[in-house]
Length: 184
Image 1: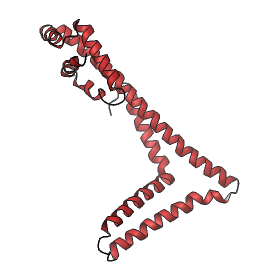
Image 2: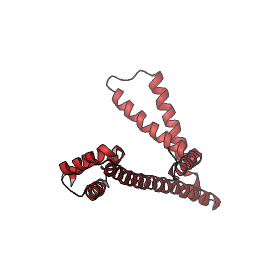
Image 3: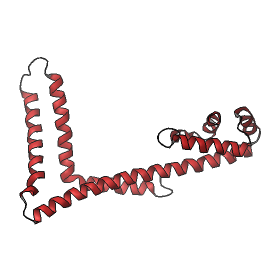
Image 4: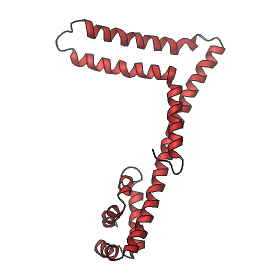
């Protein structure tokens, strides 16, 4: 069956990107089944000859493979949308928890603000020290690792406080792209 895959890719290259990953084996089996169904054989040489000699068979197979690619693309976009929705729900839950703690007068409500302050001040101080102070020999690697970690933490901190707008824009874009007939 796997020998029919190169023939299918030569007719519909867009199907190739779905032959890898979690659903790759299932897609490969579907592609091979389509080629076998259209050409009437599982022999690669005979199938290639049938496609080469009959343009209608080639067109029929191209259409079926394009439909499969479209279904796979739709499934991939739906999975991406589901991931984004879960991520946005997680952020929303974290913010709702903070709001509920603030409403109840809990001192824990200040934790995100305090952590954010500490992360951003630490990032700023380390950046200032890196730019204005002489570093001990051999400490460059450690400083780069520290700055990278602090930069990631600072990004997460800013995303926590202003991520709703960015997340909303991403969600809107993803919904637009996932609508039938829309291209990214």
